[in-house]
Image 1 (cartoon, rainbow, N blue to C red):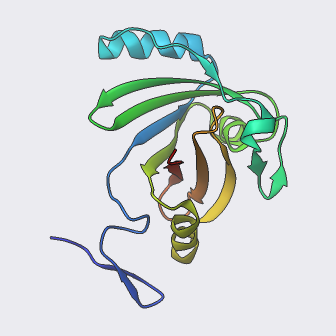
Image 2 (image 1 turned 30 degrees about the vertical axis):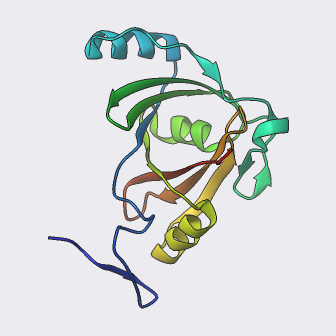
Length: 167
């Protein structure tokens, strides 16, 4: 049974963000190296490389509406199915959605991510649904952007919108 969602009277056929296919589940961790080892053992795969989020000159990270040049993290990715990733994130000490989650909740599932075609449109639809933009930035290699929408009140997690730029 397909659910038709209406936001401000407009029907949306494939969910608020235009898709119902989860692209990624992100975990906040204190020790990315230890977490990578455990997940690799559990999944029976190679340990992936750790990568930094990137330089602020590229990422332009904004947290709660303010530039966040110090916000940073280490990341690692596991491909766990067709089009699905498991992401591990170890934040630094600077204010960010990642650090806030670790400080308030400890380690655990931080976000569920969806690949979108138009971030601006998806953000507007999320805001109409009641979510608020918490943090956004550009991928460290400049190939796309991420937007964390706070959905903790109704969805009990953060929703991440991922958009890859066409080259």
